[in-house]
Image (cartoon, rainbow, N blue to C red):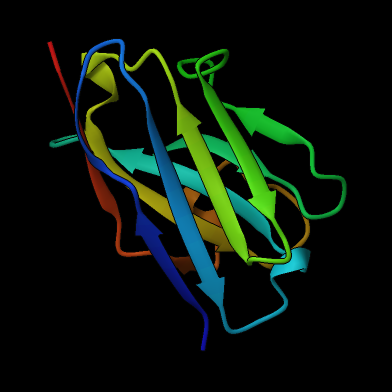
Length: 124
């Protein structure tokens, strides 16, 4: 059974920073592509960032490029999302996801496992 547990969300002022963590268990973490998605009220879940297991290359949505950094520690089975220069529009529930199937990784449907989500609220 795969489990993904996010932590690190909270309330922060615009311009501030947060670091999200996602601890994984249950299968060989190092062979997963790990992603972060977010969902704001009334909106669909959207891709934020991903890091592939095969080469460790990061990928970002245009809206967060230059502000967010995704990284992974395969020894700790943990993926991180460092969020800097936060904006009010970054407010959402952030979800960690694991993709065990090689191929595309930018869509919700590409991922096999999901965490429960952590709330990030950015105030003006």
